[in-house]
Amino acid sequence: MKHQYSPAQSKEDIRMSVWRLMEENNVARPPRPVYGRIPNFEGAERAAERVLELDEFAKADTVKVNPDSPQRPLRELVLKAGKNLLTPTPRLRCGFLLIKPGKVHEKNYGFASTIRGSFKYGVRVDLDEIPKPAFIIVGSVAVTPEGSRLGKGSGYSELECGILAELGLIDEETPIATTVHELQIVEYVPREAYDINVDYILTPEREVRTGSEPTGRKGIIWSMVTGEMMRGMPILENLYRMRRI
Image (cartoon, rainbow, N blue to C red; front, side, top):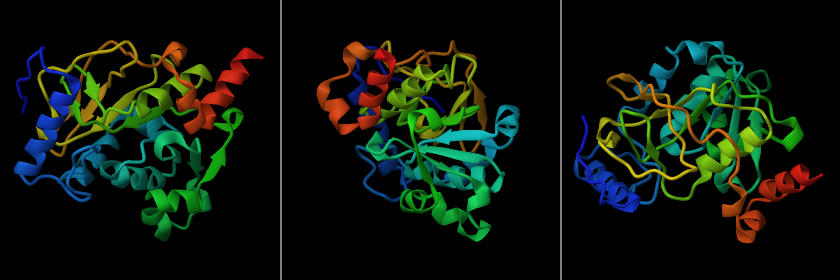
């Protein structure tokens, strides 16, 4: 299912349309309302299960997954699959956390996959300790079948991938996927130089291989990083200092 959006529409117009569609069709899950969020959705568990069917996921030792609500089932499945879970802290305030399945009892995987649980069972990793993720999951508000996506507008997914790229931990060969509801698949989204493309879209109903040219995996566009951003995300400031040494 795709929804028509005009090239004249802004990113925020498209986000608002998708959030409204999800609320009006009652496919949104708590936390609600979904406005301003990576929206949780009915069928998130099935969409997560489809990720496990991908060969690239099966081969990965470490998987990076965003901390938002619709991807919580996927974070649990990563641990159940015996893989290391690399997850950014909300707003990147505390950098990245690494959760190793062997350090968590299986009965606690569900809690460990929540934000609160990740702080209990995860270990904060410094820049030189971050493991190389072989597969990446990002949350989306909207995505096109060709792989262009919109987040909630704060740019954290782009910054997270940019940091990993700066460290040489990901490149254009690193697969990126997103899990969404069918109502989040749209015809068009505007693009910026820093935006991430995804290789896979997983919904409760299907798997879409986008075949897009990989973007957003080359590093930070430092000219767009402000002092306020660095103060709010010390990992950015540390990375900036590291690259100047």
